[in-house]
Amino acid sequence: MEENNIDNEKDNVNEETVEKNDVKIDEKYTEEKQEIKSEVEEIKKVETGESKPKIVPSYNKKNDTKKPVKRIKSKITVVIIWTVIICILIAGITFTYNVVMYNKYKKYDEYIEKMDIYGYSRMYDNKSPKSSEKVTKSEAIKMIVSTALNVYSIEGIAPLNNPKYDNEIWVNYANAMELLPESIDEKNQNDRISYIDVLSILSKVKVNMLELNLDIEGKPTFSDIDRYKNEQQTVLKDAVWNKIIDNNTSNLNGNRKIAKGELNELLIKFSEKYRTMTLNSDDKFVINDEKLPYNFDDYPYVLANVNKKIYETKFYTEDIGKSKIPIEIYADEKENMASMSSIILQYFDAILNVDYATIDINDFRWKVNQVSMYEFGDDQIQDYINYVKENKIKLIGNAKIQMPIVYFDGSKYRARTIVEFNVEQSNKLENVLFSDNLTGNTYKYDLGSNLKIIDVPFEKDNETGNVYICMGSINKNIAGDVGILK
Image 1 (cartoon, rainbow, N blue to C red):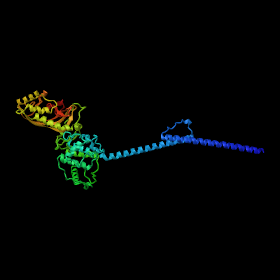
Image 2: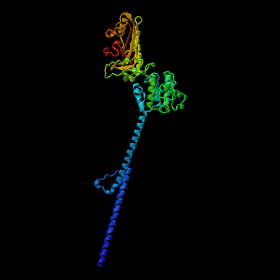
Image 3: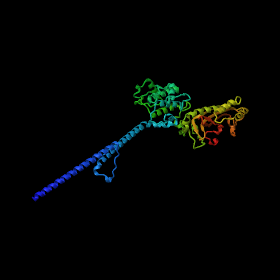
Image 4: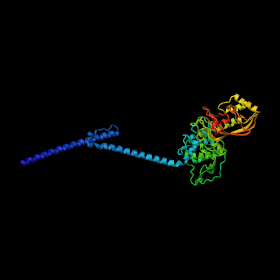
């Protein structure tokens, strides 16, 4: 009986224990469920921006609350990884593209230096001759026309009021000269230009502006030559014959759109072939290396009709820190060089062609003072005229600028010039040229032929940019003789 009671008591204890355990499990389950529910709601709020994630100190964190945080961190990690991958892909594609473009246009970089020396580069819309950059139709036309004329502006010869787009003045000029293979207007002026169209425009420049005939002796061997119109084939014949383009048996693909590199090549070859940067179309470049002056690198180009020794004669320097050799100033001063040549012709025509029987103060004064930076006074001119008449002086001569030997001595521009004159007659051979007596020195000349190589000084008007001669005695400006120049 006692044993039965003991067993019953044990069973009751077990049941109570089980019941308590069940209650604890239910409570724990309910508690965990509630916590999970709360955490899910909190995560949703964070994802939707309704709530900021709660920062819990590490000592209060429970092991069973770490899983949602890990889920958030894993999403952020995935985003970061994909962002890095995309950035690497973009960088790789960009690098590959740049390498391809560099290799494609690298061969044209040799023309950039001459584009800068001749001043052609500054005519691009962005002033850059970078080989891989694109070039538009109107921009290409500006480049071609300005190269042919060797100028930076045509407002003086083809003014245009209220242009509708950039470069319209150049397009209008090209249209007036019948250079364009197709109409160019506000709508298509910004389109890219094709290789064959550039060659066609250059051929029209040769005929209509330079007044030269096309050479049809050339025999292009391009594999696609039959695809071009008859007029285009004639253009290609001329370009091949004159080595503006290289002849080969590959596909020319003339309708392709070109970049600046190819345009640079065509401009340099065309301008050097027809010497558009020189003052005279009859000028010839030195092609024999043995005839080049030792300092040929000082010049933008070297002409065969200028004696090598004249190129080699040293430059006068007034201020070495500011002085510039011809290759350094050509691009800046090329538009003034034609003016310098005209001024030299006018000034020296007056002082080298003197006849005691016909000299007139008004005519003489006008010729020398119109082109001089500092005008000579009537007393100075009259004193010379009296001297000419008293000594029955008669002179005949001329002067010619030696291009492109124009440099800056640090104070003045100087143009190397050959002065030739004959003293036909004179009672005295001293100070027969105008302004000799103004120096206070005595200069003696030969009866008959006289030749001087001088560096004619010029100054620039700061307001207009025009240049004017500031000539004293030619004997104070002998080329290469610094002692006399000083």
